[in-house]
View (cartoon, rainbow, N blue to C red):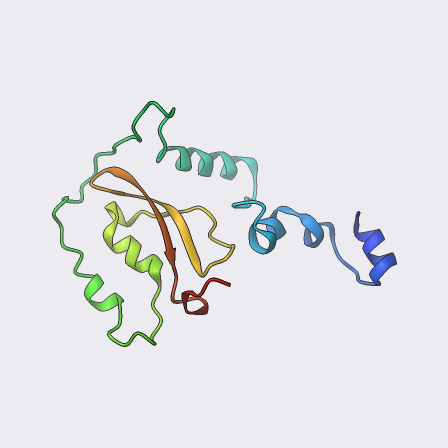
Length: 142
């Protein structure tokens, strides 16, 4: 089914991108995790994702040396989470405050932004994150 069929059946004008392009599937349907401007960007982001994963199920995820001390105290957290539970805050800021070098790789940054999924590192080790984001829809799962 294409834009012509939609126009005939519903009298609605719609583009191929709106009907089922990469941007639609990474922001509306959630079928795709991300969309990219070009192949080079897609390959670079794929490489970045693979940096967090082991090469096989028999291996450990790669450990990466970094300049963040493992015993650092994330003082930024003091001002990120408000005392009032009715005041929203951005969970991305919280995650970035605790991961190595503030580097958080979000898996689906444009879909269901009220929940975060992604990877970071703590002490050089890969860590997966799943978190509600109070900054969007108060973090409620819809």
